[in-house]
Each structure stands twice: as structure tokens, then as C-alpha cells.
Image (cartoon, helix red, strand yellow):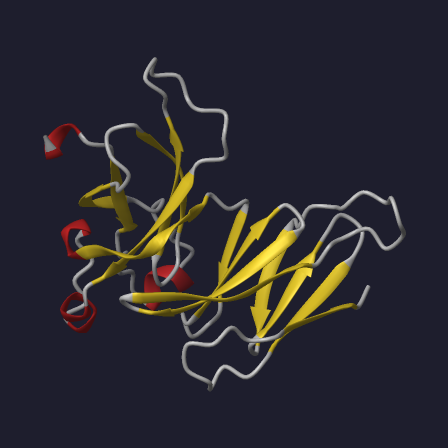
Length: 201
């Protein structure tokens, strides 16, 4: 039964239209309010429990999986991507019913970041980052690399704590270092690109 399947309710911020004269006069602006745009049915069957929502050009919903005894499983869970249908983007339709699944499921990431163009998506798992190219309905893995590893033999790896794309270059920071990831040639169709990493701080 589709109605009993796990769902995520989506909201958007309501637009507040206040004249510039009112703001200049010292009038306060009301707190932001949200408006529901509907519920999105989550992939993965009846045993998934939505845990985290990553926003961006495509939504990513991270879920844990429950076992038969309804307790969450001990593994890391799965994540699923959802993008608006092309007609909805053109019509600026933001209702939840306009979203469709794209790509395959991936392990639930610790962090997720999109570039400004909404084409590149970086996901972090501990000290490893994977970069995907989004071209709905395709979602292609370009490559993955360990970026915050121990520099000396036997030194423990450190987790990535932030990601940011700047002009097509991915910056990753760990607890005590900053790394940059350069992408290879993205012009070649359906190929894995080379990822080069450098420590800059």
C-alpha cells in the first residue's frame, strides 16, 4: 500500500514582500514561515526510515533500514536522489509530486555538496570523497579519492568535516588540514575522470 510507505514532507519558505520604505523606517520583518509543498514517497520499500535530507538541485534522502523486528539495522543505510521533472523546472512547479527518482541508491553520506551550476555533486564518507555528474535522469560516478588520510605510515585517517566547490574545484577540510581536489577532463562522455588531490594547509 503506497499510503503506508515512508514519506518525507517538503516545505519551502514563504515569500515575504515588504516595501523598502517600511524597512528603512525601522519596521521589523516577520519571522520566516514555511508552506508545505506535499509529501515525497521514499524509495527502498517499507523498511526504510528517512534520517537526513540534503538539499540542492536534486534532493538526497538518507535512510536507515529496519530489520524484521523493527529495530534500525546497524549498517550505514542508503541514500536516494530525487529531481524535479523537466516540465516542472520550466514551469517553476515546486510541488513534491513533481519529483522523480534519479540514479541508483548510494550508501548514506556524511556530507553532500553541489557546485554552483548544479552539475557536480560531492559526497563524503569519512575521509573519502566521491564526485558525481548529474544529468537527469543519469547520475554518473566520476571518481572517488581518499583526501584526508594519514601522511605517515600507521597514522589514523581523519574525517572530512566540510566540502565546497569553487570554480569547478572541490575544497575539503579535515580537523587540521585543507585539501583541494582537481577534476580531470569532463568533456569525455561516460568515462571516469582523473581526480588529483593536494594538501594546501
